Image (tube, rainbow, N blue to C red):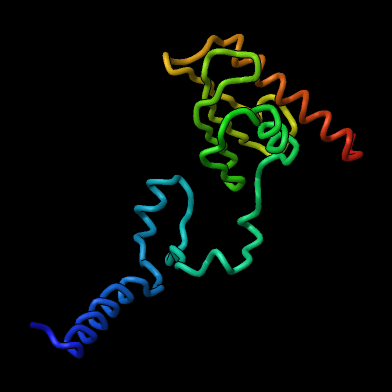
Amino acid sequence: MMTFSSKIAGLAMASLVVLAGCGERETKLNPKAWEVESGREADKYRNEGGLFDIFSGDADAGVKVNRFLWTASLDVLDFLPVQSADPFTGVISTGYGTPPGGGRAYRATVLISDPALDARSLNVALQTRGGPVSAGTQRAVEDAILARARQLRVQAGRY
């Protein structure tokens, strides 16, 4: 039977082992291997970052998607339950839902890949329980999102 003090000691030891893996240190990389792999000159030392980097306020970690396309996508597809939405990568993933007046359930994945309000910035993948939808249906949803994004931009006073 373990005593209370041995339980505490075991818990403290396990905590130290877990925390030891959280240390922030620089990883030395072979610059030649980095040049070959990426085709560009590399740093001698590369910092992979740590747990608290999300609080650093790094200006480079800004949102790189068009806010009008983002809002319009959520507006047009509001009948679908949002499973995940990541404005940093521009991906919106929904679950199955039935549109108003429709009988077939759809789910969608939206990718906004550029900060420009442009059709090339928007990629919508629609799917039913039986498989992918027709290209015409997918194009109609993309057009509806683009039209709504343009409306939002005009309402915001940005022509």
